[in-house]
Amino acid sequence: MNYWLMKSEPDEVSVDDALAAPKSTVPWTGVRNYQARNFMRDGMRVGDGVLFYHSSCAEPGIVGIARVASSAYPDPTQFDRKSPYHDPASKKEEPRWLLVDVQVVRKTRNLTLPELRADPELQDLVVLRKGNRLSITPVEPKHWKRIVKLLDAG
Image (cartoon, rainbow, N blue to C red; front, top):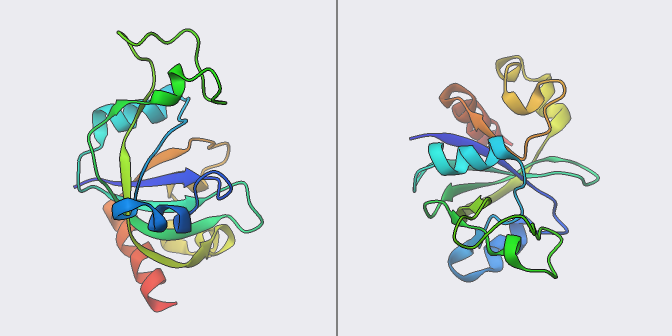
């Protein structure tokens, strides 16, 4: 099993939005970075663990535990001219952008960015690296265990 941290702006899709969706599952649309797309295409498997992270908000942090609920498939927003994620260069017969469905298992307290940075066991967590802007990053099993422990304790 692999583990991932997936960022979402809460005004686009929050953990509460995901919980309110049928089967607490949402399509992870709008990824427009090749490395993040490749993580979904090549690395993610159904059942992988996901840390649901709110970004671009007052208090960024991990707000839920989720799982990958589908294999990667074409993101329909790339073909929708009204979508902010429309990509006129992407062709239906050869889609450029993919998504996976993500199912929230449980909402957690907000484990904030300062808390993550302050924990010595998480110093090499990818999302904490200077300059990291990816919306999807791999999480090592030791980091996953530590974060779940922090969430369960607090």
